[in-house]
Length: 291
Ligand code: PLP
Image 1: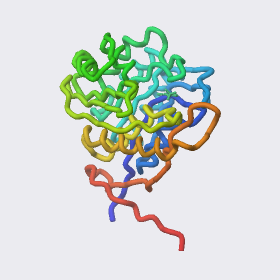
Image 2: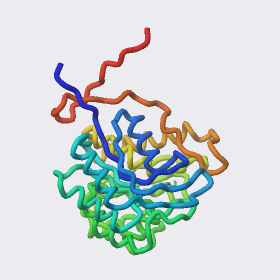
Image 3: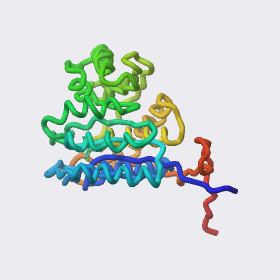
Image 4: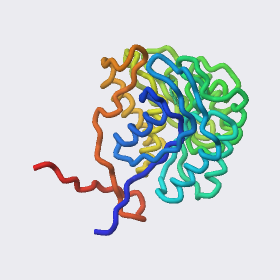
């Protein structure tokens, strides 16, 4: 048999010391789905399930160097970008990717934590919209983020469609607007391409406060499925399924005194590998079992 290589993805995101969101959630998610996770840390946040008490940005040159180091050697086949605190780091990421052939990039437009802390410096929003958005294959805003990107209120499904048309001016590619903030029992996420509605993904809301990091988890899962070679709609469908199960399987578990994490590891699978240099026809590694 020839040489094998893992299916690999890179997450570029902030660290959550509480372990439920950010880069920790991304690495758990990708690993649980059988994808090797490399990482570039953009910021260190001091937080637990009760909230965020501090944020420290990593110097932009170090963000860029981490990406180049991973890209030059490990060669992931899909990228997830989460929290990026300042405009210089956003430009450093764009600069880093200018050296490589285009790859699928999932951009989770992280702006504010659910507890209200700023995950993006004041003044960096225009840079996010004008430099980071255009390099993304898929952008995954929640309703408040979609509203900010579109410059309009988004309060219903029709508003989501109108916002998607406006956001297409900055990125004509794929856009997944997550409808979780519409206070309905049935959640609807809407997938667009160049502002046109392509697919609607529905699901029932699970009653739990353990939803910290669900946005990070979803975008990381999408990147993992893209790394395996799935197209965007299928990757989104599979990733939503994973997140729904992870929420359900962690709904009744207490981790701290506040908003807990989902159960990323409800059904981990071994790392997948493919023949080195081959297209995305993945095969299971032969793991030795204990006798
Ligand atoms: N911490 C970090 C570093 C994040 O990037 C994110 C979201 O993207 C979160 C926390 C998520 O926080 P919450 O689920 O409270 O919105």
